[in-house]
Length: 446
Image 1: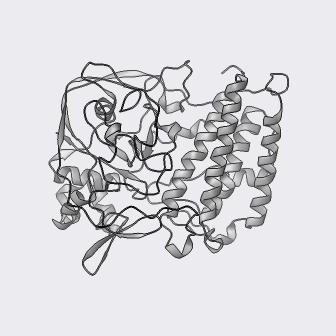
Image 2: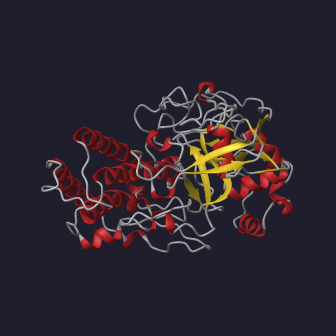
Image 3: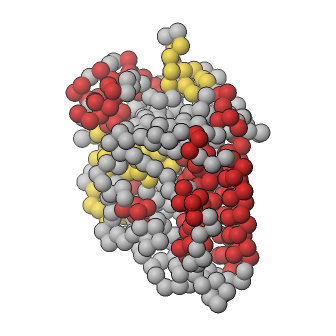
């Protein structure tokens, strides 16, 4: 990559977005009560305290370290907070709260890093003053989106905290929910054979992470797909009819997982006096039957088999969400207009899902509901490189470390996904036995 600088107006827009993303994560940490900051709400993830240091350390390591070659701010803490974890094969972190620095030390470290970066950004954007080793525009986009990704990770992490460990934020609106609605009838959409365009072209003006390149087309035979995501009401039938006890519906690894972990229902459900309830972010509700169900890939795949169907491939999702009868493709399911609050449940507008089909203006040309927002969607496609993949030289492991056949692509977006990541090429990925992410699914006919 050749050294370059952004146009002043683009640079200023990116710096404003970075400031805005900081405010998003700062507000999230304020939700956690002081005595809960060293909790580990999700066994496979670091304690909350790690993320308080990680976001600033990542920005410093990326911008000051890799892009500008300025060296470490604090060698020990720069390393400690450099990277998160995603353990496979059951390996879980074994640290204790006492292994982490005091909050006051981390806050002082964060302040030093943030002020140091702001000083760098205040300099004129000239090669002689700011010798960026990588394109400044790319580096700033990475810093922004990395932080916003963690805003979502932190949301589903903090979702696992009990109410007494959280502070309801000012301005929080109680969930607009009064009583369970009847289950929504399943409806399949016929998608004609056609082409799906995945990825984005290298060398253009669009930002993308390394796994989003290179653009290529995939021929997709005709298929039928659910018009909406599978709802809690539909999944309740799977639970009541013994889906978690039917060995034939699960792969060997998935069966071992649910039995070893004693999993018998979705993570956010719980039962009280024979009635099902739902743990929303700050409330407990009677199970909202018309909300999309959030489950692991293993549970989604088992339900699909129960229904005599399968999970869609990444290409099938693209074809149904972005394709048209005319053979053209849209930038977004609804067309080419940029996202706004009337088109889907995304960009931090809500903490929880809403009823499927609540955004008719956001439908795809083929009639797919909620293709963006209201919950990520599991696919059957293992996370793998697109043809022509090249890792970022300054972040080589971002994608490549997870091309291991043990992670699956998820598409779409959740209520806590930032608008910048609603682009068609964006890919997310998780392990199949990870039940915490805001991910639902829809089925395709085999």
